[in-house]
Image 1 (cartoon, rainbow, N blue to C red):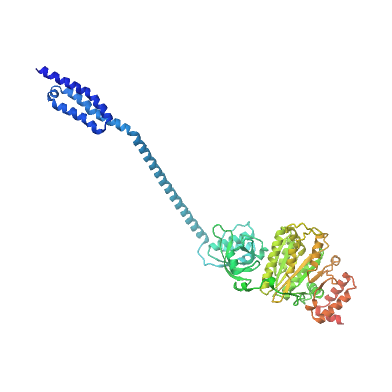
Image 2: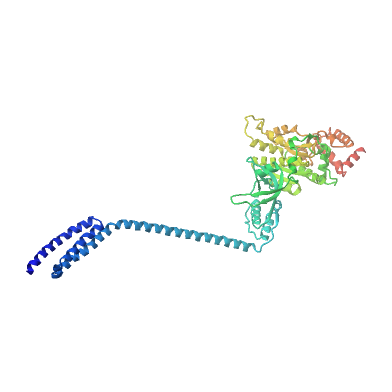
Length: 558
């Protein structure tokens, strides 16, 4: 009986074993909730048949063991299927973390660099402060005074203020670097110069010590300041300046203190030079000094042959090597001695550098030059600056004298710069080239409202150039005073080599007294039939015998 009861149980167990793989296939397709049902069925069969489990524990353990292990394998298969997605998510997270880490590192590096730069800046500041030494009170430095000093004097000022300057620099660069260093130390910079307005509307203050040559030490003037104060080309402006900011190259005018040595408000009410009334010269510029020197002989002869007045437009007509430059020097010294109230400018165009140095040392007035090794545009620019400055001074009722050497070379420069019109005169002179030098020379006049502009210019003749003769012929009728020099007299080494018969002044009766005028006419009547050389020797002999022209006229009565 026992055997019969055991056989059916084994038959029931067999289909249960066969059903196990089917449940595994269903579990692999169905969701996790459906996977729990076969496991519950296997447990129920095991409880319903306790005899089988009690009789054969080994078979039950063999059936239960795979049933318990298989769900775990299925979980592993599920985890394998979902693995690539998790790996991608993990890789993205790792990349994000790496990017964040790199960004943090870059931020830290930038912070370290900024801190390093700040430390270097602080260290450089501390080093500069150490180099500068103890703090000092701010001083007032004048740019005009610095330009008058020599290069060794500029280095002495730099050493006194603990400023290092390079030796091999132009003087303008030295002045600019010195001013820049002084401005950093808190010094107040004063500057002055003659305004040159450029076509763009702004301008620069040029220095007469550099012959109005553009340089790094020029002061920038904004268009707003030019419009606000009514500043014109040639005005002498003074004021305080500020150091150049980042991206700027020049010092800039900060405040205007004076215009042509007057308050800025007064310059707005001045009459333009072109609107002033011109008159004949009626106030004489006396050349004679009365010291009886050899130089005074030239001045006395000029007073006799062709007297000069305020507002005169005179020409010194001279061949080469006749002593025209020496006569210019004598006239300048005579004006300085007898008329210190007159503002004098000596303009040297296309001259030799050694003559420029000699003129600067012998004349106390303003000497502006443009040597022969500079381009024609430079000659023109210097001449324009000088004549514009003189006009502005005359508008302020001042007496100005310009001594020009020479107007022939200035006209040559204008002829080179002027655009070709297609009409060429004899000697290669363009028809429109002489307009601007004539305007320069024609600016000389005596002003009824006050002030005067006198221009004494030299004109070259007998140079072998047809152009020079044409230029002289064009200017011959524009002047109201001419002083002729003779080559034959100069070759005999008789100086001054003045041809008295050809020299003279228009309306000279306005400049001399009646009794003196009668004696001068008498002298001309005596000298006219004589040869030029003999007449010059005769007059010089009589002048050397007396100390002044008054004594000479008194001797003529006898």
